[in-house]
Structure formats: C-alpha cells, structure tokens
Image (cartoon, rainbow, N blue to C red; front, side):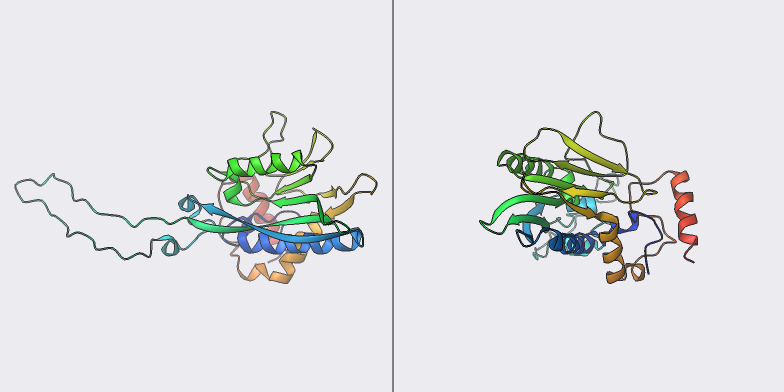
Length: 260
C-alpha cells in the first residue's frame, strides 16, 4: 500500500520519524549506488547527538513519557502537609527529572573509492538538528564540510523547528531541500508543500563527472511500501504538529478518502 499523499506524508513526521530517517538514508544510498559506481561508493555513517531537551518532542517523536524519566532511584522526602491553621501554604513535590537522549543520526556519504575521499554529504535532518542546543553544532558541521570542499545536500522533511539554512528569500513552504556545492557560495533550494510531488535533485560528484540524480519521491514510496507504514498510522487523527490550516486539512481528508 502507498501513502495517500502524492509527496511527503506528514504523518511520518511523528513518532515514526526515527525509523523513516534510517530507512530513507539506506534507500537513498541504494538508489545512488548504481549511478555512481564503480568510481564512487555510497556509505551510511552514524553520528550521535545528545538531545538535552527531549521534552519538546514528547507526544511527537517520543510518545512514551515514561522512557524519559530518570531511572535512578532516589529517596523522596516525606510530604509536609500544612496544618489547618495555615491552609494556604503550598505542598512541595519533587517531579521526575528528564534525561538527555542519545540520538543516532545517519548521513549518506559519497566517497571517491580510489582514495576514500568524502565528496558529498547527504544530510537528512532530525528534530535535534533544528532546535537549541543541536542547531548550533549542526550549522558548524555544515560550515566545516563546506570549508574542506565537500558538497552538502540537505533534506528537510520536518515542518517543525528552525531551518539550519536561513535566508530572506527562503521559500515559506512545508519542506525544503538545499544543495551547497563545494566550489560555490550559492545554494540551490527546492521548496515544496504537502500537496506537491517530492523533487528529483542532483547529487554532485567530482568536477569531471556529471551529477547523479536522486528521486526523493521514489525513495519515499519505497520505504513506505517496504515498511508497511499504513499499519502504524491512524489517518483519522490529525497529523503531528505544527498544525496545518483548515484548507490544507480539507485537502488531506479528500486524499485519504480516496484510499478508503
């Protein structure tokens, strides 16, 4: 079964996103491999980010609040209740602490097979990349990659958070794909909404070789079918935050009803 939407399925932006993220990275590498071989290889690398504000994702990406509670057993002091002479005095209760969560983020790396040189990094953004404190180190990582001559293809399929790339002319659309080539200072932008098809974008290699082409729509269709995501999504509910307009929700309901 396919998604009811022609492009990005916003229901995948919630608690399914970690699975979507990992599967998408693998399928992106799979689709690129035959185009770039034998000179290049596509490999998945993982880096770890500490999500120190996981409570911002409770109910979206971390639906079970219990897993966020501190497992360290502490001896709670006895509750002190006010006497009947002082009924307005408060009762102080210690709340469970929220732990940081280690998030493993996959990145697709295109490497020159001859010398194992990193040529292109394909970054699929995670929520932790788009808000404090993870936003700053991610921006620094992008700057470092560009400074050493690496192409950066950034895929942002999450509506919430702050875009790492910010510009007055950045389109105000639900989703963004950006490409910063190693030899240039200009960034190519593909902006699209939930109603739109996902773009086919170039994946640059070394200067003497033509770009590979990545069909994001094909990649998302593959992972949706393979993963049977329709078994985990209740399309009668609203999609994860941030909220859509009523007009957008009406359009979504019509698309969903076509599969009923």
